[in-house]
Structures are given as C-alpha cells and as structure tokens.
Length: 459
Image (cartoon, rainbow, N blue to C red; front, side, top):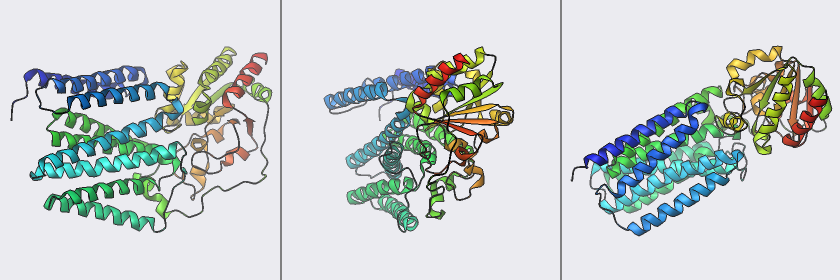
C-alpha cells in the first residue's frame, strides 16, 4: 500500500477543518452564510484532491460526466427551490447521500468479494444504514410535499410487520458477515429499503422534521463507514461530524416537541385509530376585515407577531416586516415569536425573516417570549397553527400532545391570518380559532398583510 503524499494529507486536513468551521458557523444566523461557503469550499477541495492524489481509478470520463451532471442538477435545484420547499430538498439530498454510500459499498464488495471480515462488517453497516436513510428520506419528501397523507400511516399489523422486517434485516446482515454471498447482499438491500419505508410511515406530519434530522445522522454514519470501506480518512471525519451533529439536533428537536424520540417514531402504533380533532361542522368563528385588525393593532401598546409555514407559502415576510415598522413608528412595541419547529424544519422562520432584513434581536425564542404573552395586547398569528394549538396541553389524544407551544392564548386579543379553516400540518382542529377573543382574517397572507399595512397607516 503506497503512502499518501504529504500535500494530500494537508489538503484533507484543511478540508476537515473547514467542515468543523462550517458547523460552528451554522450555529448562529449571523455566521450561517459564511459557514455554508466554508463547507462548500471544503467539499470542493476534498473532491479535487482525489483526482491528483495518485489513487488508481477507472472510467475517468464517466466520473467527470457524473460530476458535471450532478453539479448542474444541484445548482439549478438550489437556485429554483422556494423557501417553502427547502425541507423537501434537504430530505432528497440527504436520501441521495445515504443511497450513494450504500451503492459505493456494494460496488466495493463486488470488487473485493468480501474476504476481509472488518471490511465486510463496515460494508454491511453502510448498506443497511444508507438504504434506510434513502428510502426513509423519500417517504419524508412525499409527506412534506403532501403527495401522500401527512398523518401517521399504520398498516394492519404494522407494528409486528416492522419488528419482523427489522429482525430479518439484522439476521441477513449477520449471515452476510458469516457467509458472504451476493444473493444475501441483494436480500439485505431490499430488507433495509423496506424497513426505511416502514420506519417513517407511522410518523405524523408535525414530527417529520425530527425524522429528517435523524435520517441525516444515519447518512453521516453511513458515509463514515463508507470512508472505512474506501480507506478515506476525510470521509470518516466528515461522516462522523454529520452523524454527531444530526444526533444532537434530533435530541434537541425531540425535547422541543416535549416527548421522547421513541414517542415520535413509534407513538402512532399505540394511538387511537380516530384522529384527534375531527370536522367542526358549522361552529361559528369571529372574522374581521383588514380595517378591524388595523384598529386593534394601532391602539395596542405591545404586539407579538407569530410567523408560520403559511407566511413562507405566501412569501409575505417582507410585508410582515413592513407592518412591524409601521407599528414601531407609532411607538408600539413589536416582537417576533419563534417556535423551535415552526415551518417545516429548525431555523425555517429565522432564515425566512432574515431574507426580509428583520433585526435578529427582535426574534424571540419560545422560552423567552412565552411569559410576555400575558402582557401583550395583540398576538398576530400569520400562517401558524400547530405551534399555537392548545390541544398540545389539553387533548391527550392529539398527535401533538406534550409539545411545548407558544402561549398565544394568553394574549388579550388574538388575530389569525388564515387562507381557510383547514387544520394545520398535524391535521387536527385548533380550538383557539373558536375563542371569543380570536379574530380571523381570511385570505392570502401577503394580500391580507398588505391591506392591514395600508389600513394601519390610516389609523
């Protein structure tokens, strides 16, 4: 085995340091953009170095074509994707990473015959974890895109089918290590892909961001194991970083949802077959006009704005900032309440509002802002639903029960900007909509906010 040239080792070290700095940069909104650029630079260095490191490789033309095609697809997808679809893209890219790691390990196995036991264990691990990440990420994409139902999907006997498939996957993995055979590898691949689907189907829409984070950790671990298979230290470092950070993020998100990760992943198996919060028939609600809302806001001393996914869909973040500025010009105190899982993934609202140049100091996390609602004259909810739904505290049958929420119901008056009475992503009714102190303003969020801004100027 030839020794790795010194310059290659130094270049890989530089790339590894850049990956670490990337995670550091992503820990704060002010440095996130720089962190992303450092990560991209590290990935570029790692990719280029491979071609000049002296490692023997075949099919150079095919490799270069794949690089160009993949880069073009990635560039176009990233440039065109709307902020509302960013979580779906993250799920897809994450799944592709896990699938790629599994495919590379399969190819290495077919090339070597799996004679080395340690190599075989790493290969099996990569195939299983990478395949679960791939198929599971595809299901999360379908849920987020609402191509399939966002509610938990529990098949008849699903709990036992999932356990059986998991046991068969482990058995096939152990058998493959003991007695390597190509047909066993194919069987293991199929079982792992099936388990990834069964693993994610029972997860409800509100919990999908947690699963994305967990699958991201899986992808990191599969890449790290793939690095061992390929003898690439940088892949081991990068994969370990992704696996560790994804695991920590999953833990933090599960805590933000107020229940253990096992409850998020397997709670649907023990839930009632009847979804919480069914149809509400002709229950009355209090609706108002933009002028009504403007009067409520214009005569308030303190207003808290609560953005949600509907704000992102309407691309109304700039209009919301304009409303805040108009209220501040009248001497009204304005803050933004940010729930940890508002939108479709952590940081979704922070990024959205940063695009509109909202001062970061005005963004208050849930723990900080919740005590302030009791002294708030008007809480204006724009496109949020599940993160302000009191059912999380009062309805034990609700899929979001136990999730900490923004205490909007403690405000003196509540205004909801909604397109319709359709439930939130969790698919359950929000009783706050029927509270006597709640006023609903129906319509597209951007158009409604524009009307409110115009009316506020006249108050």
